Image 1 (cartoon, one colour):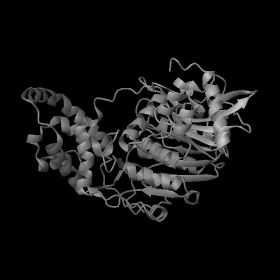
Image 2: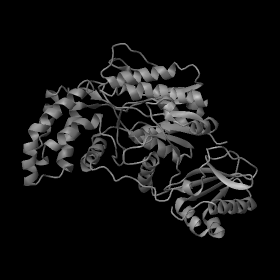
Image 3: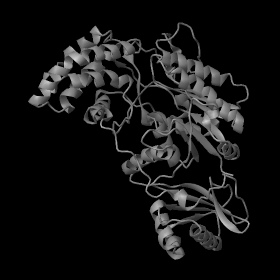
Image 4: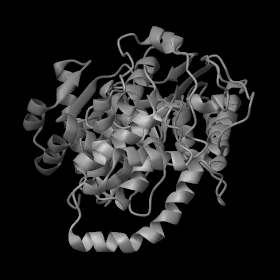
Length: 485
């Protein structure tokens, strides 16, 4: 039976790139995602993959999606879901986290980063998963200033903020879990956008001063030296060095490690090849505002003047939260990372590269307005699955079905008591039928075996088995009501 990797945090910035890269590498994935007010868990995942499909110009496979809650024991999964995972999953990539720097009234970041990790480990123990990939942070080093080794996990001088402390605690918890057979730890530095497009969905860290400053100033009035001086007033030392790392590089390195078992059981610093001074960052932010922000109209200038008095207190409050964050970074050892993936050297953080991130943030107005909610017009699973629990269906004539593109996913098609049934997840050592969701939808409409045979792919089985599988799939769809899909 094909084994799946469980991924948490798949709709966050790093998680979305990890999902993309794992799908490209044909790694079977189960995403544990919470619903939002506007979208179901499946719709949130669908939105992530559709965005990448538009960028790549190709259809991607779809993961299995289960709704979860980091704050609940064993992540709030149902008995049937846990039973399915105990048969199908053999690893967890725990990426979900809170980025709160200061503890909130709701208990973040500790509720997500400490309790959430504990709940994820409890789930793994309950379903028998003993291989764990943990996304930590380079800043578990806290306030230490000497060279930070990948083997280090030392609370020597305390921490700059609650985020660092919570991530230190969660990484220590994972390392001390006695029943795990394999623990691989990834420690990114400050994550920024895609190195090519600049895309980001999260505007913390590097983006915080820019996000606060950009609405306050008009590009024609920006003074580069003034921005740097303003940062100094807020406690940002222009000579301090920071460590910015593009999300696509982090994801590429992590995926390369995950798919190669010989690279497991290590700790990897995912940090920059060169640090950037806060002074240079400030000057580039000012330059980016000059280049990429549209000048205000006269009416907008008048409204901005009225809003300035209201915004300045908020500006000071937010920068106070980040004050400990904008300290000088230590140097991070990258021996394990450079040895494991020499084909992926760190991306140089040049001025041109940083302007790629700044331009995207300004031109996208820091992610506002938010994209429209994703809707799955034709969910393939609704044309295949019954309402029965997710039991395995195996047999001599079983085959896998992978439908890529919108609403797609993985299924095993087999017969039970003579009738064809579909269950989520691919079988192992069985033929595999693949197609895109447009082809599947057309097949549901006309059920033409000949037309489907010309567009679907078949691997691991004889031509006669392909013909039989097509007939079985048609029989299965005939038993389901697809007219309203």
